[in-house]
Length: 80
Image 1 (cartoon, rainbow, N blue to C red):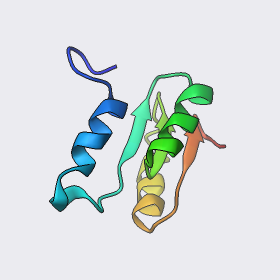
Image 2 (image 1 turned 135 degrees about the vertical axis):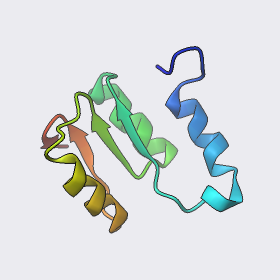
Image 3 (image 1 turned 180 degrees about the horizontal axis):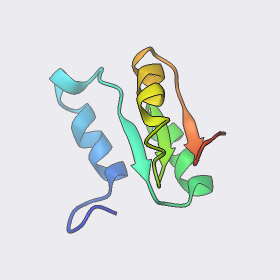
Image 4 (image 1 turned 90 degrees about the horizontal axis):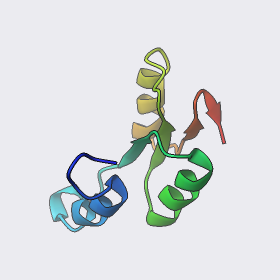
């Protein structure tokens, strides 16, 4: 749902094609329906998914967990 651009899902492949970014964890942050978007993010290879609205109190801890190698699939404040 990026304005005037391809979706974040579409951009994933372009980012992964760049050798310098090939190992960087990519997190989908989206207002899309999580029941549809989370399986799609997992299938593409995203490191994690966080649904909007983002909980600003949880975000720093979530990012620390992701950078430590965990995969988080968040629908609001609930891990799925």
